[in-house]
Image (cartoon, rainbow, N blue to C red; front, top):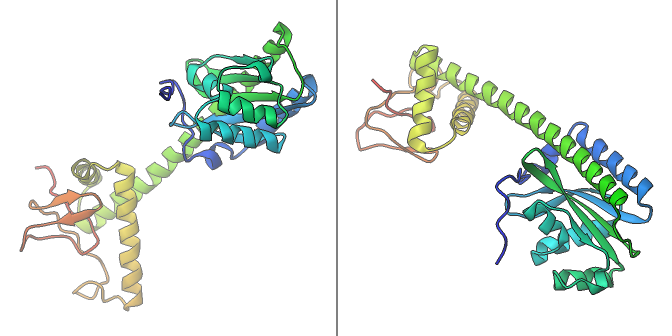
Length: 280
């Protein structure tokens, strides 16, 4: 049975490009260079954790690392995944005599690997990924080598933690920008003040069970689409010729996903616009 990923794992899913933006990728590559200095001839890779309990290789100094990391994901076993899932360092001094993860180890030995050291990237109580060192030589891990690997893993965890904070800040700023636009549109089209407009969007989010950012993005996108259609038709999108979409808040509206359905004859917003009853 596949081990469940640690509840402390900070998932990378879908964010590899975001996490590797800015200065984090050069920082991780610098850590690889440091590893090569104290462990010459070792193939080194730094991976970020995925929510599924697998990982994504972020940087590596040899194609063999990408291949072996990918193989562990495919086989759903290996020292790196064990380090990630169980939050402890895994040492394999002699790959040929290793009885754990037999399918993976046989393939690794065929590729020339003779020893492996895998260290989780831990910061506080959070696990960000794993550091994997594959060697073509039999290298028993002494205390000095282990300390160096853990120091390297700690630095990698710091870099990923900082990248995550920057990513979260960027997402938060974008969310505020989009929600602010949507509030402004609701104020303009529905004649609401800012508090009522925000309550309107919040009600849409609650009824549709979608995140407020998704609702706001949908709202803004639909406004852009309607304005584009109005421009294409010379400003005749609205019956009064103003080109302005008409939002009508209805007490007979049910929001499902991104769509709105109403009973026959119920007042609704202009097609493509969300409509929902405002709380009285």
